[in-house]
Image (cartoon, rainbow, N blue to C red; front, side, top):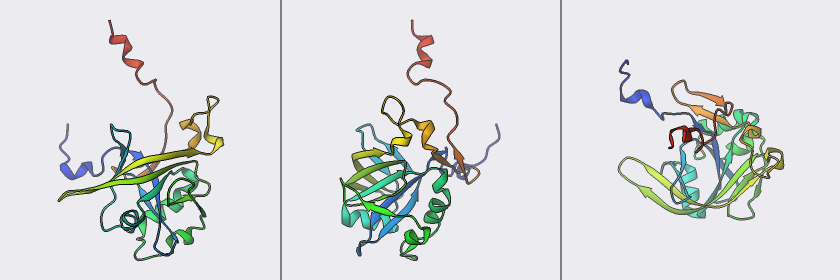
Length: 190
């Protein structure tokens, strides 16, 4: 194996691209590109949203936000929303032409046309000398009926979800299903 150094890992593995949506003080919509989110073992979400971000400020004030799973049809918009700051370009959401409606469950916007939306309330900010994490409770998850399977659950293959891959600084589509979790390893059970 060739040593690449510690910085080669960057953000590491490919991760889903999400749009984190909040309201500004004047009621306008702010959205950022977010790909550093994980589910905690308590069923909450841990979102790496730095303190200098407008989204962080808005979550601190409103105690709520939404996360949208971005698909290929939203790629240009999400890329732009992750390139400019809500502090420097207050109307960045409007510039994309996207629309939003108020969530029924939290004080945050839902982006119209989103295939899957996770509505969240702030639990707390976890701050260290090196990072800030927004710990959030999932209040509701909504999905467009077009991405539901016959069983009424989300069919990942229908979302068209994209992933950010930091090694090449690129977006990728979700690949094909290659196995069933908690089943493939049964061959080793006695």
